[in-house]
Image (cartoon, rainbow, N blue to C red):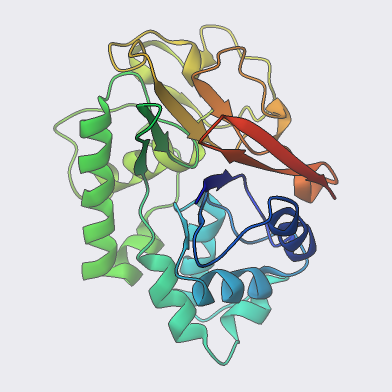
Length: 267
């Protein structure tokens, strides 16, 4: 039995199936966790979703494009490839499955005593893993209680830094932005959400270049997607980027946690 973490699929169904074949995925024994962004930009978002829903051993964290789909479904308005999902016969099933995906998943590889913290974009250095888990669950609870209200209020880049006193939609928005949209951070974990390149603006650094007590723990791996332009390169073995730009005609990549081996298929 093996556990694999797979980078952003973005509706690239054929490549997703090819990757499952390449790793010899056994749905009765193996487990798959996806770093979010199952949908959008690629050609077959609906097929990707239906495949994942049908397999109880496949899960995913929420990505920003997944949240965008949930928003479109909440207002019954489809765009592009996502129009097929919004208008699908099983759209209620899809909505209920997707909205219950967490923002953070933690798993352990017991034989090697490795721990893997999986999010779509990462975790800011100002939060411990426990803090990030609790805040992610706070958002999940809000989505469960009143999905339409939160999905329509989550858009925007402000506030751009964390403050414990934040409440309501501002609090939910900054949590979502850290966990699903973050790339570069400045002092006090200030978000730069405009820069999608690999070169930081003045006074900013990639989020995984900061020091924190959580980051210093050995055998603890932060696995994320979202940042396709990195092509998986972080220059730190404990920060593993898995979005290798499949939807941009790059590769779709899986990480086998048993031995930290990466397996990829080309677009």
